[in-house]
Length: 129
Image 1 (cartoon, rainbow, N blue to C red):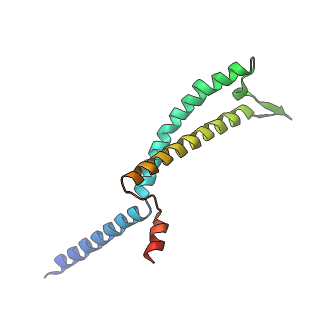
Image 2: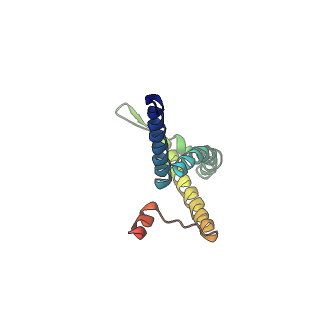
Image 3: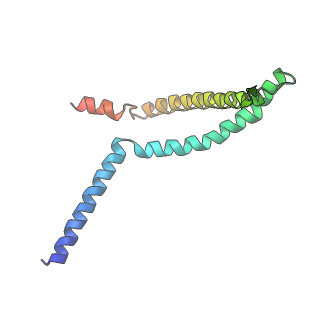
């Protein structure tokens, strides 16, 4: 065996070991699920924005004639505080949390039906001990 083949063999072994550790890391910490959740969450933000700005906000404006609550500002000592923007973002956050809760609830229920447990990696580690 010459030196070049030996170095290539060591390099391939190192790469193989690193890829194996990386794959274990992805599975252990659910990185793929986190990435998918992030992408879906960003997409659902657009839906929530439309729901708040296109349905909830106009409905509230109907209930409170001549007031646009999401455009409310407070001026104090020359500074403008965007109270309406804060309210708008808070409503969007609440809707996002409710939708996420409902989706997770049904997802976990369906996973249990097909025999997939919703236990965390910490729970599995405790059982192995």
